[in-house]
Length: 207
Image (cartoon, rainbow, N blue to C red; front, side):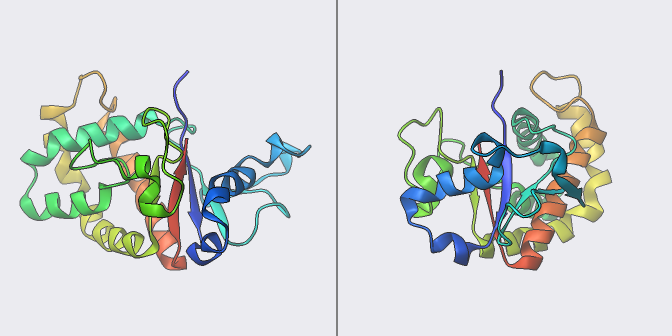
């Protein structure tokens, strides 16, 4: 069974008040409260792609619901691989904006340099196992703000990626099945970073 990805929008000030060694457990408790308490899953409220248990999760944390992935991590990995393949064929200005938007979310210029494996630069304890890191992504509020600005530049250019996708990704294993699916996931990430930037919050991805 593949790895999952749970992305949380987090108020960094509130997260910073929790001891570093307790942060992952605290976020996990909020993301999956039914693992600890007898919570009725049917009582969860879904709105605008957000999932939050009424009366359970604090006001400083919200889970991002990716409707195109059903919680799996591999679609994000495949989309990142698609961008890595396509980017040499993309206009330089779009490539720069795409790198800024997708870097650290689903794509990294240097795949060996994994910030999640180091605990997100001190936000979380360093992972002892690179194969099973504590977190899959850490995006500080100031970084999120930059990604939201990059998304504003990327979104109008999405249709222009159709040709590069057809050349480099269509029909290849380990890549998104369709261009439409690839763009749909990018739009979901665009919505996530835009909302997190509006709140002034950061992002954390738990496996």
